[in-house]
Every structure is written in structure tokens, then in C-alpha cells.
Length: 327
Image 1 (cartoon, rainbow, N blue to C red):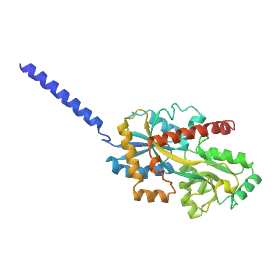
Image 2 (image 1 turned 90 degrees about the horizontal axis):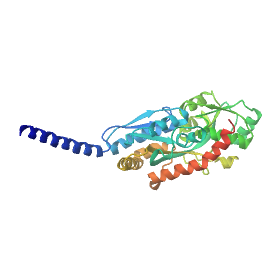
Image 3 (image 1 turned 180 degrees about the vertical axis):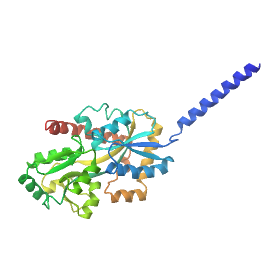
């Protein structure tokens, strides 16, 4: 009888622990969440991730830790997330560079549409064509004239041949008959540092990372690569107005989890994004950075999935035709 009571007690305890374990597994999040930024610290995506993570912590009740995993035009960091346990505790933040370009250029070991679960579209901003004081031009027409008079003397940094900056540089040269060197960097932050320091000359740069340098006079902007002017710098003409029509590339961003992440976790993460982007303090911070907030209807998994798919369908053929042949 004593043995029977012991076995019964063990059985009851095992059931109780199983029930408690199942209940605990259903509570998300119960620990910190890692956001993989596929670029070096200090760049625009990293800055957005840190601002967003601080506010999402309030909504989720758990800290969000930023981990910078750079290289491969962002594909190394993205690949890290596709291989992570699909439990919602490892998520990917990225942009056009990391989630559109790489797969068009080289094998990345994953399918960016199939192996990631979309969470929400995030704030975006356009590219600007900018240069430092070493370029004696005050508008895009002058810049083109100077580049034609000095072929191959100027250099422009990019984060690799699969990035928006590289594509912008190739398109610009093909459209204007100019020639300059495209120099690969590991990310936007080191590229911008060298541009301001005069190590390189011009750049197709993300708007938010140029603002402080435009305001200080260290850089000069010639055009914004969008169909309409940028609210953060409305005096800068569009690329169409400046004389190189059709070069429209924006840095939209999104948040993803590994494919197979429980719907409950995705829903909570998406809800935290919505809460965060509705916060007046964060909105003001993003406005100061020149970031355009997506509408509430766009802050959904379906909206991000549709945007992501459309961008790949639009740009992959262009990238392969314009860049692979050039290489």
C-alpha cells in the first residue's frame, strides 16, 4: 500500500508539473527578447531598433536586447533569425538592404519570404544623394557636370552590391553617363563617417542618417529619391525635379520572426509595435529623425507581407540586370 501511495503521488506530481509547464509555455513573453540588427551599431536601422525596443519593453513587460550581426549586406543577421527557434524570442528588424537585395545577388541559404513570419511594417524614409565639401557643386546639374569632367576620380560608399545605395549608384551612372567608384562598407554608419571625414566623396544615403550633417553644413544634398519631397527637408528637390527621373528607392523597414512562431507571440509583438508607434514621445523622436510612420492599417503582418513580396518582385529583376551584368 505504501508503494502504491508513493507511485500515485509521483504520478500526480508529474501531471501537475506538466500542467504548470504547459501554462508557463503559453505565457509570452516570460523573458527577454533579442532583436537582431543586421548592420553595425550606430546606423539608421540600429537607431530605430533601439528607440522602438525601449518603448516595446513597456508594452511587453520584458526587456528587448539589441544584437548587431553585420555582414553580407545584412544577410548574415537575417540568416541567423531564420535558423533561430521559432518561439518569438529572436526577432529580425531590417530594411530594403537586408530583406530585399541579398537574395537577388548571391545564395543566402534561406528564402526571405518563406522562412520569416512578418510582424509589422515600421517607419521609413527616402534616400538622398549627398556629397561633402570636396565636391564643388551646388545642385545636381553641377554635380553631374563635375563627375563627367572628372571620370573615376570620385568614390561613393555602399554596403555591398545588393544594397539600395549600390543600386542607386549604378542607376545614377547609367542615367547620367558619369563614372565613379562604388566602395563596399559593412554598413551605413562607417560609410557615413568616412563621407563626412572626406575619405569618400558622395553617397546615396538614407535620409535619417544625413539630417544632422545637413543641418551642420558638413554635407550637401542634391536630390531625394522619391516621387514627392521629404517632410524633414522640403527644400531638397525630388530626383525627378533635379533631372534624373525614375530613381525612386525608399528605406522601408519591418519586423519579422522565424517561420513557425506561434500566432499568439506574433500577435503580442505586433500589438507592442502598434502601442509603441502610437506613443507621442516616440513619435516626436522619430519625426526628429525624419522617419515617416506607416498608417495603422499598414502596421499588420499582412501589410508587411504584401509590401515585402511586391518589393522583391519589382527589384530583383532590376538588380540582376543592372548589377550582376556590371560585375
